[in-house]
Image (tube, rainbow over all chains, first blue to last red; front, side, top):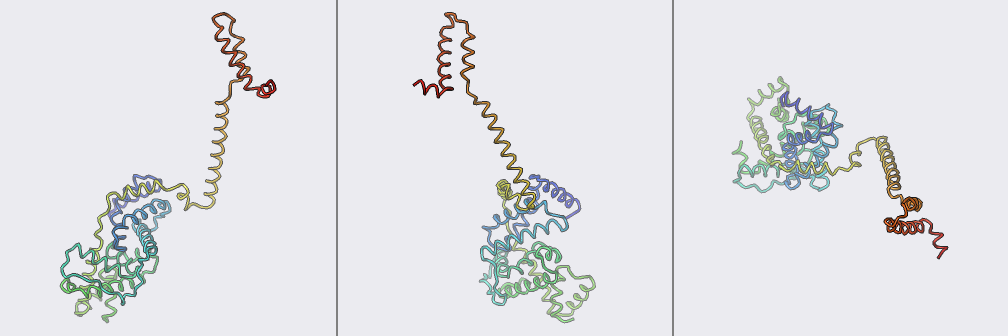
Amino acid sequence: MDVEMENELNQLIQHCKEGDLASFEKVVQLFSARVSNVIYSMINNSGDVDDIAQEVFIKIYKNIATFREESKFSTWIHRITVNTVWDYLRKSKNRKTIPIENVEPPFVSDEHGKEDLGKLMRRYIEMLPVEYRTVLVLKDIEDCSYKEIAEITKCRMGTVESRLFRARQALKELLKETTWWRDYL
Amino acid sequence: MKCAKTETLISKLIDHELPQNEAAVVQSHIDSCPNCRLFLSELTALKGLSKTAADYKANPCLWTRIAQGIASITPVSILAGASKLVKIWVAMASVLVTTTGAILYEMHDTEREQPTSAESIESEIFNIPPTPENLEKITLNMLVYTNGYMKHQPEITKGAL
């Protein structure tokens, strides 16, 4: 994000803190795609994405006055998003606790287009334990730094590093079962 | 440098989280090791593939839903994050405003619904000159007077009956 955009965002945040709904609408426009995609990649259920995104933004609106600007605004939004998704997974009992070594790869067709690839990757990501899934989505999809991921998930940077490495190893093992993986490299 | 150690560093390398000097050491190992070279290409491919998972088309009606959600936030839920002292002050202020409003309404209501007294009708009757033209008006006022008197003196009416 360039300096001009950052200044504009800071102004929007100040207006939101004063209760300006029009500024909050702009914040929603800026972040809705990112928030929705983090949710979708983590839950792999398109039917619930909007409900969770709505909950996330209402939480942001209610708590924006408490945002102390010690971290990046996007980091703060990600923390709220991740916490809301974790709550959802806990409630819907979708939270995976299967050890990675016991994870069975799903059936994969030899011929799949780009759209199917996204679906397939979400299916694989969904198989990962939620802690691994979170760091993988935040790093590979949202391009957060290790430091930001540590702030979002409230764990040490070393933990982020090892979870990310294990998540990638597990995904790699799953992809090795497919017939197209070698050709893809 | 051993391959097992390099693998963890390759993960950091593709994320640009390695200091420049360490990255150079890892890169030189990769150049000389086919296994680690393969590992690097696998992780790079994996990173690209993970991005394809984020293909959700944001709902254009999301803002409408959020705005509706915000509108339905009750004052109580707005105070959810407030301190206990603030909540007590808000509660006391609400009680004060409600009580004052009720008293003011009651006073206004009493003034508005004050019934016409029999005395005021009486003064009207005796102020009309007793001419034939006013006969009808006087008769009507007399009836109203009698009715008002009985209304305001129910105990006498009961006694008379």
